[in-house]
Length: 99
Image (tube, rainbow, N blue to C red; front, side, top):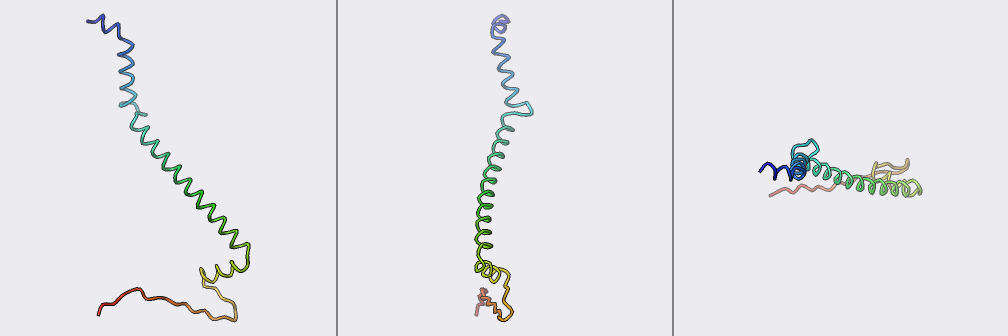
């Protein structure tokens, strides 16, 4: 019996090594899988942020490239006005009252 085990010693050692690497090592298969998922999520976030940055750069170019667009942005976003103008802000009441 011992001679048969001795004949398969390399396969037995390989099996023990594989079990150790899959389950007991600090870099086991489950840890590697979770790290791969994290990397994938971070790469997706990087792509989304890159797209958002390119959109913001395009908007900045459009905004500062034209004086009319700059005035429109200042009026809409920051409610700025010229010296000889009056500014009226219309706020719609969205709360419904029950009678």
